[in-house]
Amino acid sequence: MTTPGTDPPVGPREAPPAGHDVAIIGSHLASGLLATVLARQGLRVLLVDAPGGAGPAGDSTVPYTTAVLHLLGERFDVPEIASFAHFEDLPDPVRRLSGIKKSLAFLHHTPGRRHDPAHTVQFHVPGEHSEWHLYRPVVDEYARDLAVRYGAEVAPDGVTVTGIQLSAEGASLTLSDGRGYRARYLVDAAGTDSPLLRHLGVGAGPDGLLLRSRLLHAHLRDVRPFEECSTLADYRRATAWSRGTVHHVFPGGWIQVVDFRNHDRAASELCSVNVGLDPDRFTDLPAEPAAAFRALVDRFPSLREQFGRAEAAGPWVAEEHWQRRVAVTHGPRWFAMERSACRTDEFLSRDVTMAAEVVHALGAALPRIARGEVPAEAELARVAAYQDALIDFNDRMLAAARTACGSFELWNAYSRVWLLWQILAHLSLKRATNEAVGDGRWDPVERFAGGGLWFRTPDGLRQLLEWFFEVMARVRAGELGQAEAARSIFRRLGRERFVPPLYRFAAPQARYYHFTMPRRLLMVAWVSTVAPKDFKRLLTRDNVTGRRQPERPSAGRPRVGVADER
Image (cartoon, rainbow, N blue to C red):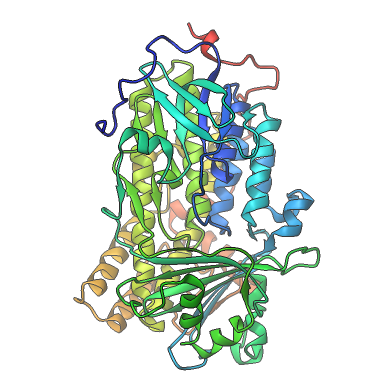
């Protein structure tokens, strides 16, 4: 076994012939987007799949996700990536099999009882946003096709990596069809069971992660829209649940329902169902995943009604202990990104969002490395530290979510902090992107030392999140009661000057978020009067006149590859 993080002394030591600058293992959304932005910048890119599968993948977006996708499209001059942020801009085959997302609904359930309408929170997506549900088979295929369009070489379907050799000069790959390739740098996005990590002897386990889950995932047919299992009038201001992402939460776990059938042009009959359960709390469920799911929903009368006729359209993906995190994520010539670095619950759009964030960082770093502008090892270490910080931040947010499932009172408070973070991160990243485009410098969106908040945000947000995580940790440790924690969160939200009147964040009874015209006018008045100065900058016109576009690679720009090195 080799020492993790070092390249094993195998393979030829001569420099690879002029071929690929970067080879990417894994064939899905993140790897396709990375291949696209690298090829757009003139690098020679190879994209090839690995044997087996990486398990379920994230299949919904939130407004902050779209801000990251907009950044990718803007910075790397790939408008098709920006279209991932707008459902109507996507190609028809993607739209027909994917779904719309008009809201995020959280319904807290108690075993043995029908759902109580008072235990509901629903956030409606403002009309200027266009969130959606990603049917990953067609979305991943589109991302691969996009990479080809921009000049990447993509191995044929069914051809996978069967052998890897690393040297001081790069990587040599052997494919299942017998062909061999060399590349100066190797990016692994195949999953924690990847051939590269096995080759390097890099271990993976749950160490370093707070969240533990038994995972169940499948695409189901004949799932009843939840509005057919309840009377919408009982939910006051609610809109049809099926037109958004539904999160059924209960003590110890959640069921996330993503509907692909929910618009007029839909050609799907499927819903994606992701279940995350505390493995220590649900030890009595059957081992077989379909039976476990049936036994779980039978405990909740409203869920039994929604899923009573549902059948899996394919095999279930299941594992008793799903979380994995690798010990080392980079070496002098390789980088393990996204699902190869960490595997955890795909709850609250974590997977798609973090994938886009890491693609942005690597999409900027690898061309600098390939052109000799920065030392490879230091630059890859910088991106790896950023990715680790994203993993830690998201793990704390998901662990807090699992803790909040203990009662509706605490979930109601948790959801406000989560929404506030999402809104402010979205606004802040949009502002940082506009500043970067206007100045032609990308420093505002490369503050990677900030971890989960890697761009300037309003003063107080970071401090609020740290305090919030500590409160939830105290609840998890049994040092603080759930009701007391919820009250303290609402009190804190009511005191913070930077919390905008977009929504009554500090009011437990305000369980439906609609960004109505009165709310918009109130927001304008707040920004014009009492809003903190650093919040005003997010929503008022800046002093940049005549926004100039940063220098971008043109289609005729010479490729910078091995043969072009000086």
